[in-house]
Amino acid sequence: MKRYINLSIVCLSVVIFACQSQTSPSAEKETIRNEITSFLNEFYSTYKSGDFEALADKLSEKSLFMGTDSKEVWNKSEMLAMLQKKHENSNDNFTYKITTRIIRISEDQNSVLVIEQLEDTPVFGENLPVRVTTQLQRQQNEWQVNFISWSIIPDNKDLFKFIDFLSKTPKEPDTK
Image (spheres, rainbow, N blue to C red):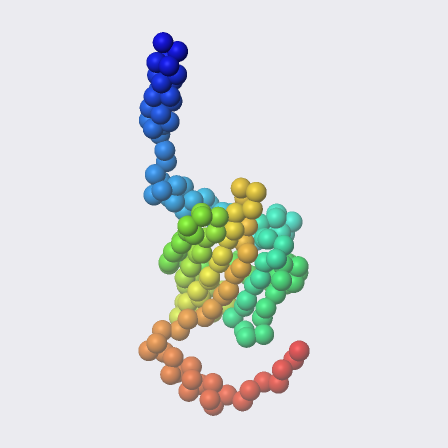
C-alpha cells in the first residue's frame, strides 16, 4: 500500500509540473521588446529634462560611446560631461523623428541590440538621417546602456556628392 501511495505522489507531481503554465519564448521576447521601448523612451526623456544623475544610472560603468566624428570616443564620465555641457550651452531641444527601431534580443535574453534611424535631427536636418546603434545589458534585473554609436547615413545616391564636396574642401587642422 505504501508503494502505491508513493507512486501516486510521484505521478501527481509529474502531472502538476507538466500542467504549469509556461510563458512562451515569443511572449517573453515581446515583454522584453516592450521593456526596451519604455527604457529608451525614458532614456531620451531623461536627457531632454537635464537629469544627468538619473541618466548616469541608466549607463553601465564600462559603457562606450562613439560619435559621428572618427575622433569621438567617450567613456561614461566623458559622455555625461559632454552631454551636460551641450545641454547647458544650447537651445537644442533634442527633437527628432524615429523612423525605424529594430530590437534584437540575445538567446539568454540579457543583452539587446537596438538600431534606430532618426530623421529631422537638430544637427543634421531632414536630409541626412542618423543611425543610432545601442547595446543594452540586463544587470541585476535592470537594463543599462553598454554601448551607443551614432552614424550619419547618406543615401547611396547622395554619397558621391559628399565625396565630391569633401575632395574640394581643404582639410581643417586637428584641434586636439
